[in-house]
Amino acid sequence: MSSRPPSAPPRLAGYEYEKMLGSGGFADVFLYRQARPQRRVAIKVLLSTALDESVRHQFDSEANVMAQMSTHPSIVTIHQAEVSGDHRPYIVMEYCSRPNYGVRFRKERITVAEALRVGVQIAGAVETAHRAGILHRDIKPANILVTDYNRPALTDFGISIAAGQGEDVEDSQGMSIPWSPPEFFADPPRADVRSDVFSLAASVYSLLAGQTPFERRGQRNTATDLIQRIASEPLPSLNRPDVPPELNRALSIAMAKDPAGRYDTALAFGRALQQVELSLSLPVTQMDVLDDRGAAPAHDGEDDELVEHTRIRKVATVDPETGTSPGGRRRRDPYAGVAPALGAAPAAAGPASWSGASAPSAADASESTMLRPAGAPAGSVGRAPLAHEHREPEPEKPRTPAWPFVTLAAVLVILLGVGATLGVRHFFVEEPDPIATTDINVPEAPQEAPGAPRSLELQVVAPEQEGGGTGRVKVAWELPENFAQEDHFIVQWQDLPANYDRYGVQHEVHGRNSVVIEIPPQLAERCLTVRTVNPNGQSSEAEKKCLNG
Image (cartoon, rainbow, N blue to C red; front, side, top):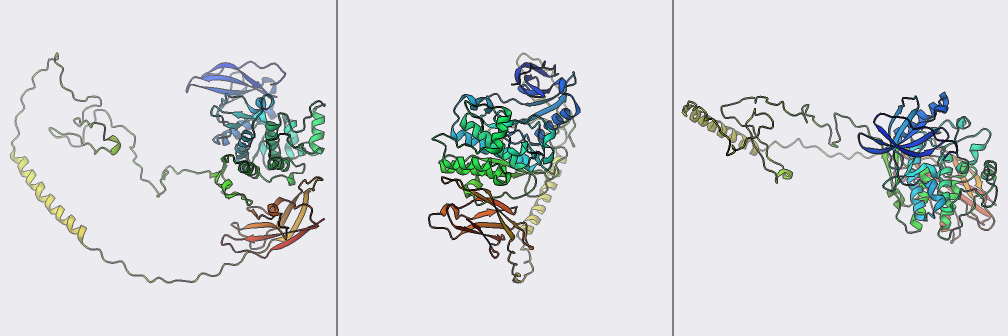
């Protein structure tokens, strides 16, 4: 909550003010009750003192960004964006009634299981934003709200930017220092997707520590102190007996000082948290990612169970002519759903004509079918006269001779008999055999084996620490000349001792030409190989590189 006095809630047509929810640097958030449809909503209103062009543009961008992604289950839903009668822009959002994590992590001990679940679900939201080309840049516990269904939801994209505009960080305002990465305070400041990975990991750390990552109890914690610690001091390990080493390691990687030492994506960080869930025998949390690029997810050699718990959905464009039928184009009735005009005359009304009733479906079997004369207005269902009602006798109508009907019936019987005979004959006449074709097996040309990666380089991004701390190395290479989009790479340490199984796993790399992996400790020479593999399983020659010392 901001220290300034809150602004007055605006009068908005269709909304009734209830109470204040919170304050920020440039806006206040109020609780309103919407009249139609009836529901409680949170409305974020820009301050009248912050109506300069840059802040208003930032506010409009937030509305557009959140509306673009608010169908994600872990991103707060946007209902409307408008300007009030006193010229203040406002955003109508989903109201998340439960306390947000900015309130909770200071007041209660959050379990490891809950922190992991929140981290995985928000990682899916952040990855979705990144795939849409958006950096959040202000991920923190207070921006992780909790819905009525106890699901975390990311909000406040107020200082988000396009993912390719990292040079513009210094032009924005409102970044939260305790969860910001070191590159935010560099000269010039920069940001990319790994900056959001740092902030998300710092938020998960806060949920478990009960304080911000570089806050020191009993010491000064000014903005200057925090910036200095973020830039230079190592991340303290979480001092909780229920926090496993794997979780400390994942947070340490995600919050590396150098962005090159972090997980490349929020998806990779979410997968690391899922791996911790597996190691603790916890249910693996589903991670939802909406991808409009059509790119395959990177697997990086994770357990197949993690892939099963990562749902990456493509953005589908529905053709209104096609509908959702997978079998192709569906015929559309132009009058489907249109009620017939009241009192409309039937196509051919006879003296005692009745409208035809279609056979009821299985679902309608329990309901009675009521027939009424065609041409009768809707609602004029026939009924027996009540006892007290007096009905005038209807005048007797002249009888029609019966012989025309007898003649017509005889003609119809003859026609039906002829038609049935022709139909039966057509049904039982054998169709000619299709022209026989010869199955010619044309041998496929052998597929060219993929080329080997080129210019393999190793760069230590986190040196080994005394006392057994594992170092990390960035492995990078150039793509082979005949590289295809479906190909991937296998990175693996070679010639390791028998007790180094953890480091000897194969790292599958999809969609990029670099990866950060752990360094096997306490060995005089460590060598790894990188090779290209195509979808058929064909492998290139291995490119080898050694890390000495």
